[in-house]
Length: 105
Length: 485
Image 1 (cartoon, each protein chain N blue to C red):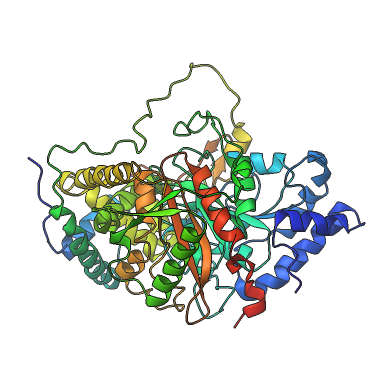
Image 2 (tube, rainbow over the protein chains, first blue to last red; image 1 turned 120 degrees about the horizontal axis):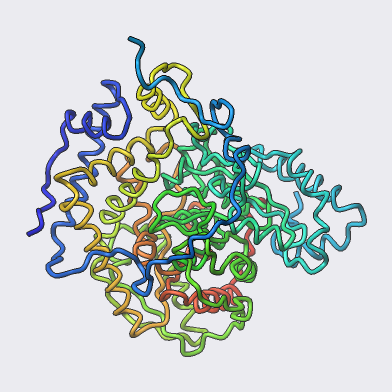
């Protein structure tokens, strides 16, 4: 049994939670603005609930003739380490450099 | 300025009359584009030195290159090796791809003079080209109005006469809607017809690259060049590419054109409605037959799209974390803080809105109610089209419900902005090919666009119908440069 798309306003707490999942941090002003805009959008989207989808297959690929594509697992030409690192904001030798993951004791 | 770039053939004629070395011609064309772009701002980055370096080797494709020396604009989400490709987002600041998109390789093989960095809504999220971190692009017909979006840059560059043609991308109408608003031709191919390798992903099940041109013949020529199977894009379809330029016969006698009542019911401006009605008359006069059809799930397309598009976008945009490329916030000294600060500072408001919306609809407890429901409604929308194409060859609708609106008008009202793509979204959801062509102007002298949609891989029908219409009307001959306000 599928759940209904409920006509439900998204709360600021939910926006804060979703922002955390998305690795975003919103200030109070943005939080209020997104809460009201997303509520309006979700209220509009709730009209999907009117559509009878009993027994309808969800689209997984838009052209039903498509199948999974495989290729032999063989070595092909690829980017050199130099090319792959050419856009790195920070690098050390042949590695991408990031800030410390483990805090100092 | 003289309109020398109105067609590929016209440009080739003009080129024949130039006796200077190719690099000098390229320099002239670049300076000309830059001068014209001062008002329109179709390009986020024109890297003149880089382009000139390439231009000196333009002869390499030989006399046979179908696009030898032809200036082609490229949307800033299509990877060009070594050129700034930023999706008009701060988070991709300074990004220079180490490889070319497949479509870029194909254009280079035909000798095109590629001018990259055409402006766009950030990550193609938008319908007005106002969300670029490099500032907005203006409509070449009226600088106080938006060019449409998200491919506002490539389209304005073509409409403004800065380049002969351009490549855009279309996820929910991003080629067709601006093409309509700027009075040019824009085509979204069948999903899988053109390789997406090197197109920076927005919504992978909806995105397609397509041509923007001033006339249908150039559209066919460009489509022929960029289409085809590519083992680097597993969704590209292994199917022979027709010679689209052979569909320019002008013959549409007996063609059955479907008119869906749902696209004409409400919410269309009268000036748009009137031009479309006149166009239907033209098609009838050319021997086509119109058939009333019904696409009953049309009104759910925008809702369906604003679940599926943002869901896929939130997933695709998870890769921007300040580690591998682009912007990294200088203000964080711990890993998670660095991710958060980078994304907070790197993404604009509309990108954040879509990431939040997509993450919400995919999150635990909401997935079935939103994402799965939307994928089922998507099936119903595709089924509507399948039924319709049993009784007609193509479907005619307006491309957009209004002509180009004023800058700033819809920026604080995302939902109204989303609804400007109401007629273009269904073709993306169903994977169909669709074209927008100019069909006159409205009360404010702004262009109106007509959309034709066909069954998958029936681009030839679109080209045949669009070309027949163009041949018998003068709308495509109007040039923004003669009419600018």
